[in-house]
Image 1 (cartoon, rainbow, N blue to C red):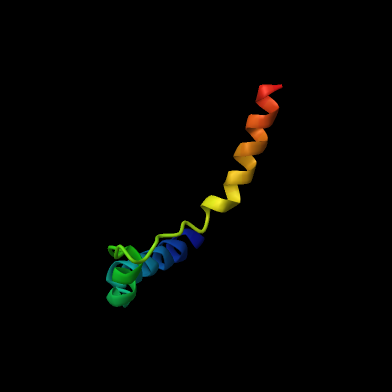
Image 2: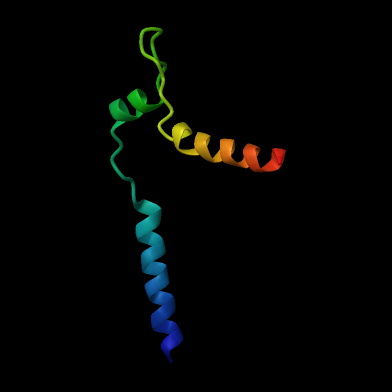
Length: 63
């Protein structure tokens, strides 16, 4: 008896997701993915976090 109600709910959610179209800020996306000028240096904000770990691993493997 509960299966019909569950299926109806899933069908309703599937229809909502199918017709869902979020608004996209294309200007912000272009800035994030875009080409950097020569004057601007690209800084990888995650690279520094892992550099120290790599050095520690190299130190232990040499021993």
